[in-house]
Length: 138
Image (cartoon, rainbow, N blue to C red):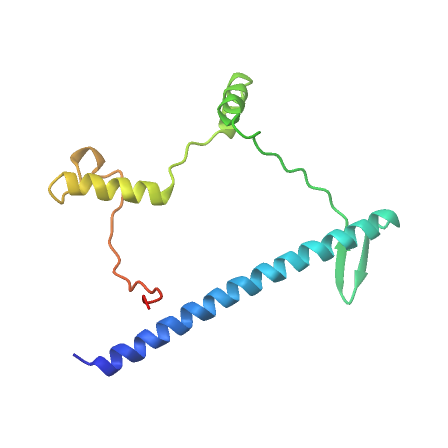
């Protein structure tokens, strides 16, 4: 076994994971700053009744978007009301990918390491081997 190469790759993997975490944190900070600047600019444009302007070849337009979501704990009531009103095409059933993966893994284990017949052709299953990385106990 090439221990030196294994350690080199392990160090590189750890460094890349750290770099990714730093980049994700930096991205969160950038998004927060963008939200703040966007809010301040939109307030200033609204106060001055400026609908749009061009600066350095970029047009900035004041827009209003409507965002809606179900009231907490009332999603099923909303879905029923939408269906009753003829708007059922807005309602989608989904299955969480991680939950489905855990369920399929459990079903395979309970079925002699084989996908049960009733799931065959309905789910794609593949395994991916990766290296887990965590702080060692002191």
